[in-house]
Length: 187
Image (cartoon, rainbow, N blue to C red):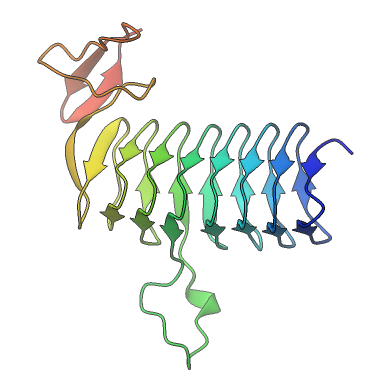
């Protein structure tokens, strides 16, 4: 087998799982789901149906990745964070045709217990703070906290908060510039 699956995990037919991926205790991967290489799906994760997960993603314990969610490479989903897939759900009305796309761009991170309301895009290398509720699109490199989530700053690709006017990371040295409200890397 090209990937690791704990004996308690359940993998449905018609899934693709990349080399080096690890799927842990009590996790269920539903049909039509594609998981890239070198990913980690922690304990009690549900992925699918028809979910796309890029390479090198980490989905921590107790996360459900519903239909409509797409992740590029290197996405981190913290423990017990929540994705939604319908804006106005009702138990007594079938709304599967109303599932909205939620798109997570390369390298973004979502903190523990955060909620991502369906239909948003999380930008490249953005950082969503633990417990935040994201209701609108998030720019690349943005630092989002609160309920509802609001941008309070910028973060480097390495995850460090960028401080000061020069937007140079004090940890890795990468430099950025702000142009028309958009953070651009200069390396």
